[in-house]
Image (tube, rainbow, N blue to C red; front, side):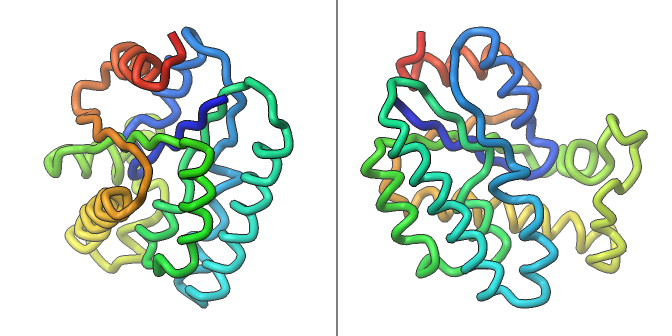
Length: 191
């Protein structure tokens, strides 16, 4: 069994990379709807409560992976690094990171160059170029929304570097999903 945590800001290509990985490797997927989505709003209201809630959910996910004890591979789309990128503190997730280390989890972060954050993260083509997450409204301006995305990407990478987990940062600017998937699968030992 091996576990991959796939990280990246919205629009970095996590879903496309997962789809490409599914063509060449077999794994159980824990999608970001289970690990991340509903915490974003909670963090702006009560960061500590959101961190407790996120840690609890991640603990359950790790319990299930450990209990399965099988040889299946797992992909976790976003995990504790995304919570830290939202502004959570490491203290909430040290135990999660320790458990991930015991499972020999590896992390891949899909990173976007600054000049692609607007087109890939803020105004996504698959949503007709709209500010689909209302980040401009939430942040007060396009500039502040882009700053928030830059900070989230930087905070995520910084958190990964502080972790005990092996990691790779993939420049996702080329959208070469099949190539990224093959590189990841080889690094994970899945091919």
